[in-house]
Amino acid sequence: MTTRRTFDRGDLLDAYLKARHYAHAGGELVDYHGRRYAALADAFAARLDQPPKAHDFRPAWFRAGDFSEFGDRAYDAWSDAQEALLDLFEQSLARLEGVTSPFAGYLEAPIPVIAYHRRFAEEVAARCEGLRTVLRAMLDDLVQTIWDFPNDRYVDAEELRKHGFDASEPEPDPLNDW
Image 1 (cartoon, rainbow, N blue to C red):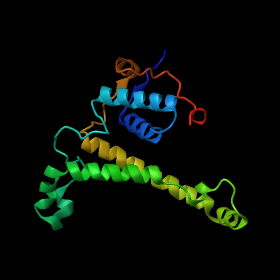
Image 2: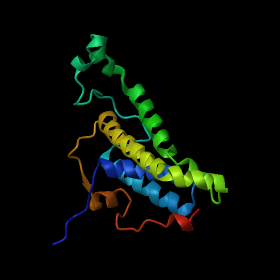
Image 3: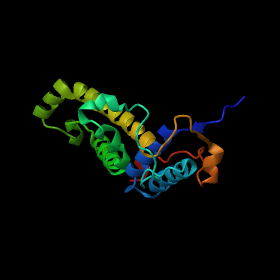
Image 4: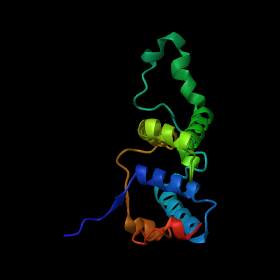
């Protein structure tokens, strides 16, 4: 018995991140990741590169009482939240894409840099990965809130095929296409 592969909000976000990452790479990478993202976005009717349709932007976890110091504004502020949340989404994307180690820029480093690498690289890498994990979780939550994306929403490979992408197509090797 074979199980059908389904795709969810996380797959849409991953596809969007990769499409952005490879936007200026060679032809196969741009084409593959662009088609993958477009098919997922169309299948879910949620284009992360465009503002969503208007809806109540208050997330389920928000309780105005937790922000009592703002009075009625805590609840009312969500009525015009789209612009602020889209900005936070873009800022979070930029920060996620920019998380790197200060050692990442060295192909060959002088001995003093190697000494600092030996002393700090492992912890820097762990902290960078931790920040990526938190930013990715926040982006996923923002997608849910901004694009009104329910947790139980899935599409399958057949749906992606209808939107122009074969999910069984292998991802091009980035090392062959820059």
